[in-house]
Length: 201
Image 1: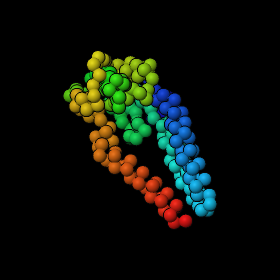
Image 2: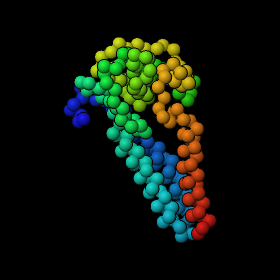
Image 3: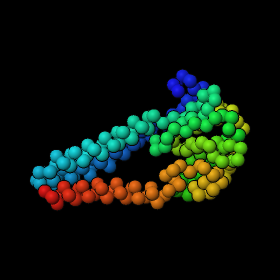
Image 4: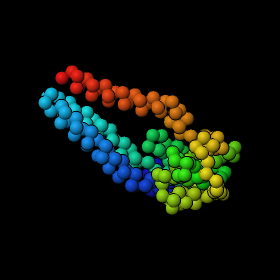
């Protein structure tokens, strides 16, 4: 479906991509500058450069993926995707109501508003995390959906949110152990590559 087929089309805050780019440079340049300096006498700086480029390409691909994230309403469906989730398409006829729910993030005093789209069994059919979207865009999407909307006043913890709205957790939120293992695995691979480069020279 092309963008012209949507009555409403919204995209995440563009500053999220800018923040990701700035974070990459702030974190990677000092680290690799030290590695280049330390490995210059060992003659393995080209391998370090390759590793640096691979990480930069991975970040670039993630940024490009971020630019393809959207939420939209057509004449028949609510559709959208996430940066780490596939396309979701929900028939408008299956939507009963929408709810705006404040949810605590990592800090107990910091809450972001989540949009949950519910079916007739009050199961979550679609979700948008407010920290990635402008409030006006979320409001526009709700208007396009055209169903009754309510707002929860009291913030929920993440676990309370998932329990109150079944089906709202993304795949990586349903599997925290897997998420942790992936992070550990990536860190171990990068650490192992650096170890081999430094001690194999």
